[in-house]
Image (cartoon, rainbow, N blue to C red):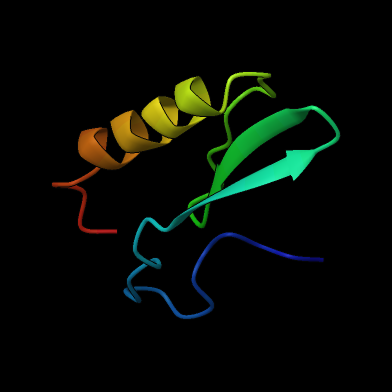
Length: 62
C-alpha cells in the first residue's frame, strides 16, 4: 500500500511539484503532496488553480 507519509519520522515531505495532465477533452493538475484539481475543459483555469496551490503552499516547509 502506498503512503504519502515519510517512512522515517522527522523526514521532510517532498516539495510541491505540480503536473498538468490531459484525459480526453479534460485536463487536471496533480501535486506530489496529494492535492489535485477537478477535471476542467479550460486548460487556463487548471493552470491558474495549480499556480494558486503552489502560491498557497510556498511557505509550507513540506
